[in-house]
View 1 (tube, rainbow, N blue to C red):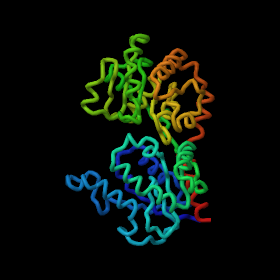
View 2 (cartoon, rainbow, N blue to C red):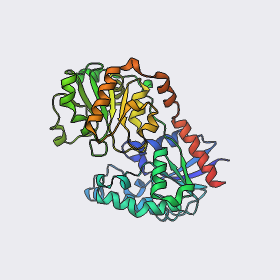
View 3 (cartoon, one colour):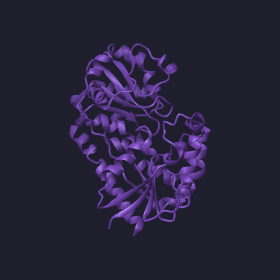
View 4 (cartoon, helix red, strand yellow):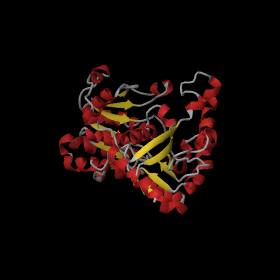
Length: 356
């Protein structure tokens, strides 16, 4: 039986980050014989994400919050829909069909200090009601599932773990011109990918730059992510900010890094670790939340993100080992656990369970 699924599609008009990628890949890989999606897009009545009206830009987050919870009232009754999938935390309150909710992480509960009042209020108002209403709750990692059960124990029986897929950068031809543009040598830099904020914790790696230079005078640290002008002014000569780059350029940076370092204090999944592993680059990552689960490597790759000495020791230890010391069979086995095709298939199984 082909399942007809209504889905909140507002993320398809946003820049491609974790949730947006999740939804795009779910829609791309679902076989039409198994599942037909009926997207409901907020921009049909709010205007596009690039709407030039400054008032609308200010009000947009509040419109989005209202849309996520009350889209049924805005778009009319659901017709020919078997169930509704909310791909990011919040389900429509007035849904007349079973709902599936995807929870990517609970950072707002575990690290509330990292979020503004508006974001905390949005999730605080709607999350519990949304999870209580849902017939099934999809979590993208075992760690996220544990967090959901810890904070919302009454929904335990509804929780199902469906891991994300990832982008295999070994299949993306590298644009090595980025190395010349940034004056980088192969194996001459550490690579960090992610937003420059307290949760991603990249500053913890940058703070080690003087000590790394003492040990490895030619080593540099490359940051791929968004930095403000003020943040860029804090960078010294051994730290390089790449700015926005293409996937081909990122493929080159992943492939040529001596080590990929991911110091995040909390993640729901952690795409960049798998992306670096896919091209054979050694990885060092935080021991926090889901990252040991997702990477699936020995503990020598992990560190406490709150202890600079431990971060430095892990980096130095892996740099001494080099690429040749990697357990490549272990890496391949770990990567084989994740694919967007598998994610889509397992999500459809959750739909079937929801309707049985």
